[in-house]
Length: 463
Ligand code: GLY
Ligand code: MN
Image 1 (cartoon, rainbow, N blue to C red):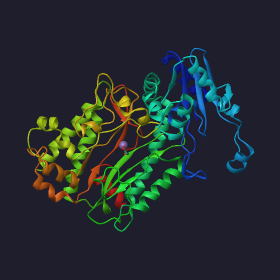
Image 2: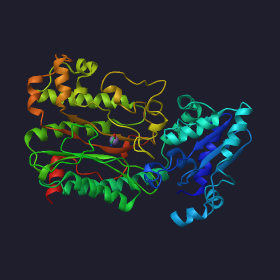
Image 3: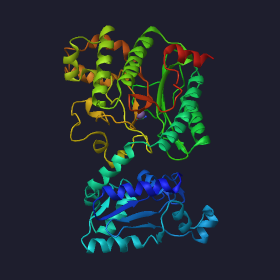
Image 4: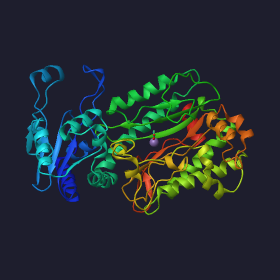
């Protein structure tokens, strides 16, 4: 938790950017795995954490703009709570720690919002992703869940996105801390990348490392020899010689900030020529994207540039052919990299994705593309100092996708399908770093860079 002045200041800024009405921020409740006595580990809503700082379930925050009044809603612990879950300072004391004076029982949520509705006040709330929060709002508003979901406040959402997207000095220190753990996780994964070791053992070891110094992982670890499956959570393989292990993993630190790195390591650190060639194209795309990222240019143009490097690199290897600009227009590189170059990162690894990916990553000026590959770019707009982003180019050989394009003759003038058959057992290579945009360009969020060339990675495995 930060000191209370930070939360007070954030709420003051929010108050000035929402013109009128009542702002309601719902915290999360516990979520049962299969029954209430066995919950998922509690995770507070990130916007609630950002403005209110309290990380226990069943809280809500209300800010009445016209009356200039704010409330924390929640219930004091019962003796049963204390027996089973332990003691905490009173809610009044905890509210005081984040600069809130008025504490009300949770049931008053219905009264305060209900009174606001009766007086035709605007009630601003965020798109509720958790079913429990949809239900709470549904009951208060007397509306079906779909009406609640579509009725979120665009004004509040945009105000929050503007604030959360620009990371303050204290937030950057937290992100750096998460980066430090992410770095350690990947070094361990590289060292364990030996034939005969199971993917599960490596994934479990690095997830344990994240838990041992922070909250948990920032997303379920992606670790597999089948790196062509972009979000592969199947860790059932045993590492084999001549294969690659793609590891995409990060940590959430004690203040809920994320890291997200990817490295692809040859088993035993032994790369063959084909693997080196593909690795070097991805590395070129990574380094060029980092060199290009600076205030004033769109991330969409950085993504397109990465696509250019990937297309030209694969053309040098004889896997594709034709004119670069025409290939980029047609979306040819998407066959090899069907995902976006990166996303915003902060209190969530895909920062604020629950508020609307397109609202976060695009604006009036920079619209989201519709073409396959380009459309998966989560963040495309003009970069500003304080943006924190991932840069994660990749090249994958997805046999089913290649076969589909071949059968449907998609971009057939550009692709040497006959050559791609040799790559059906390749897997995929992704390399991912985390950057913060500065006044001049960008810098790594965590200053130490993970081994990234084939030589550096091989040395890390074998040392
Ligand atoms: N690290 C997983 C992702 O960015 O989607
Ligand atoms: Mn990522």
